[in-house]
Length: 113
Image 1 (spheres, rainbow, N blue to C red):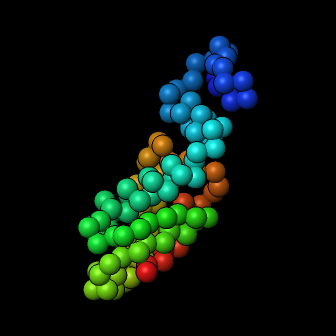
Image 2: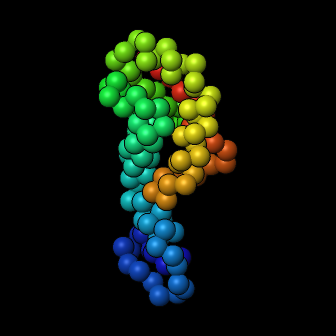
Image 3: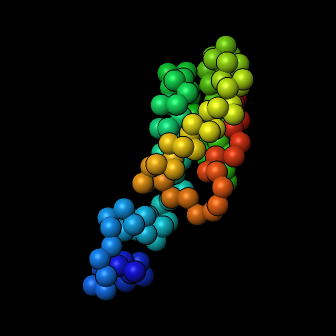
């Protein structure tokens, strides 16, 4: 590894790309949960188009919960849940700042409130 999180020093062992280095740093500093939640909220606004109606978005253990102020918009989004989950997982897989440790999709369930 090029980054030693315990000592907060960089070791000169091998050349490592910046994206790998940033991911390791985020994991070691234990800020991945907060960063993932912020990145997921950003992707939600892009994919759903309901950013101006969204009051709160949080991601916990593969479940994304979104609070929407309009019941009409919430109902329309409810019927598009599967497509929204797929599109968000594609965007998050491309995002270099989103740290995903497990296998499978990042977002497994979408709850609309």
